[in-house]
Image 1 (cartoon, rainbow, N blue to C red):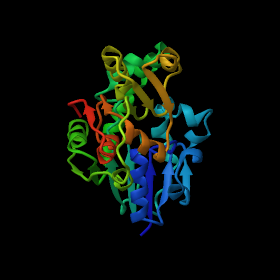
Image 2: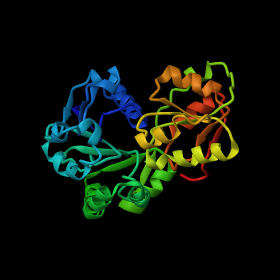
Image 3: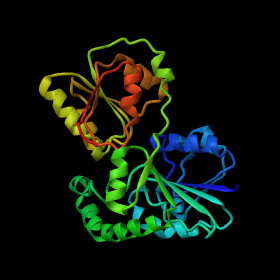
Image 4: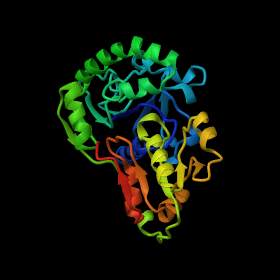
Length: 296
């Protein structure tokens, strides 16, 4: 059986990419299609497969500006010729489920999340954007919503990562989704000794919906140390707190460093609204308590 896996973009290794690795174990001969591919931050397990990119990958600074190019992605999917594939698996958190399989093909969509910036978290992203971004969001997102709903009709079956995501899929696409939890390799965390130090931990992609400002404010008000680990931090945020005695930035960390941070922190602070957060599971596996938002 010829299998194509369509993944939104390959620019880092997060939960969606770990799910992709699991899919490739099941379908070792699958061909990967994606909008943007930066091999520097992608695992060897993924890089050994044939990877085909859309024209978005050829746009200026695509590795960093891929989200700005999102309104162009539905049209870019037309470049993908999938007529010879019998099974299409779309790994969806950005625009990819709108590909065109052949009439006889089966299209399974593993929807990590309906696009947050288009639907329920639109106002959060809009509030944190610059004037120019807000202007284009108001202009382009209504069209993206129409495309997103319409493209759901091209999917034979939806699968998702949590009951929370399933509710959102029903809300926006009016489609039922079966819950299949994503992979989480907890063995390496369980084997590490706990050695708590005097700091709390915020770990994850440093973007608007993760609640970083909430974690910082909580620690400043209670005079507790906070270590912030993850990529994507805004420069003005780093400049503001770089010399603060309670706040420190660890930057992007690897698996080995993550294990150390989980074993040493007093607790993981997880104040964002998540569809399926792998980081709290990893922290708990390492014996690290998690203080999380009661939502998502």
